[in-house]
Image (tube, rainbow, N blue to C red; front, side):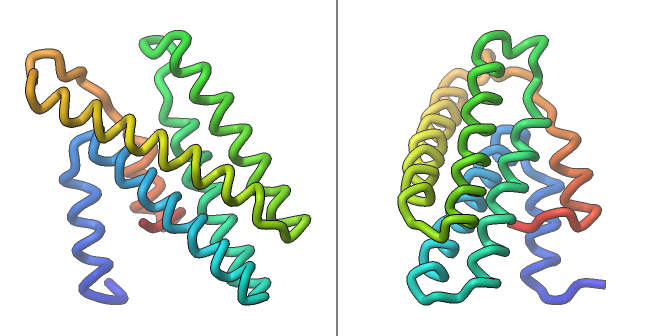
Length: 149
């Protein structure tokens, strides 16, 4: 069943989160994975570094497939391009075993996470403009064990 109480809590949190909260959770998980990859790189731990980079890459893939290009317009296209760029940089970091691409991705993710946090605060102040976002792919991927936060 659950490996730990943390897993049960996390699953409950994911399935009860609003779509915007899911996006924020994904960003935080990606940021943590990149930070872990940097630490493992500095320690020379190849397998954990590779796993952390793969984890961050997978989260970016999830964010990409969750984009709604019909309603998101130009913004969703730009986000897709940025996510693809970050995935490419993660692969470079893993292949070349260098920190610079990880730092760049971490900076980008942090900036995006801050922007989504600002959006969340704005929507709390004016709930009538809260869009009916949905991220079913994130919930499906989580329940299938495809990634973890």
